[in-house]
Image (cartoon, rainbow over all chains, first blue to last red; front, side, top):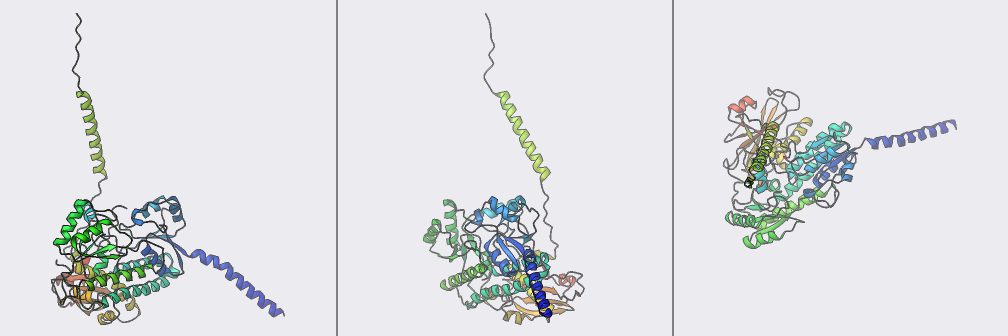
Length: 320
Length: 192
């Protein structure tokens, strides 16, 4: 009887200890702020259930035109670390951090190790001249390779902040990178040969350079002077002339962003339009990036196939 | 008879005051701009290095980005075993070792593994030098023995216009052989 009681007491004590310890464990979970949807997907896949991922921008806001609100800045005070694009797509975040209760919150610059491309488009080029050519294309998240490098950086830095989970983060990051690589490999496997040199592409928005590089394609022209800024009639006329002169075959436009001038370009030049996702609209979900990037890759493959770009001989991506 | 001299209406003095004030504002602005001007913080690259953004063409930029991402996987495999061969990496669809349409478009590099002591090199000989140069991913083994390369254990990418092989993988040997190290620089947004 005595043994029974003591065994019960031990079990009850152990259960109590476990219950008491649970809040402490929960308290240790990092709260990680992210600015854009792809970063939500990256971090959610890296941390799994070992940390909480908090979007800084509420669903429904366009990050290109986002103005921080008081309640969003307040949320920053409860974060342990913020993951930034840092090269032009979330410039509002630094101002938010400075204005928050935690101005010294650690920041992970996800693009620290990504080989960056120069920005394209008329506005970027004019600004680039005045800032020593430092204006870079901030859409590194719209590519598999750029994303993998960022995932590696984020996992490494989170591991430093939370050493107990560093191995888990590293393992999850590698598994996620492998899944991302499969998206690219599956798309490229559908192309029997490289696109021909004559397969020239333009984009409405200068967001897809990194993505198209993964097919060995280089963007010949960008229509918009800046994101969401419609070209003036004179700029539009110049772009149409340029598209004709360069014999552009395909224009990649943007999903969820229809514009009347895009129809004018199509009508005047006869090129075909294919919409790509910018992966910055809609709900934040761990799988969003994989799903929408798979669709983007499928769209580019379709464009190459439909335009008969499976030329007999591989051609150079660009001359020096 | 009283004579009153009426001076001609004019704003010469006021004009002078306004002009003086404008000059003062411009002088103040110029002084502040001069004092607060930041010196250009771009370091000039050594002759044996090339900038990834300006010194590589589109095909090479793509290859360089793929090699930078692949280095992490290779290092992870090195930590747990033998150096993975380029063929095996290609079978795992790891760019740029995978043989796909992009690889063909970027110059059809043929990859091989080169060893120099504990240092490894993944050498990609270009099949079309006009499209992309030959590239080398140099990566030190995680044993800590860097094979005479000092404490630098980072993976680095090197480019050569026409090399068909790589012997020693030290900085000195590569530079002497005409290789140039690809340097990537990080620039935070100019509007932050």
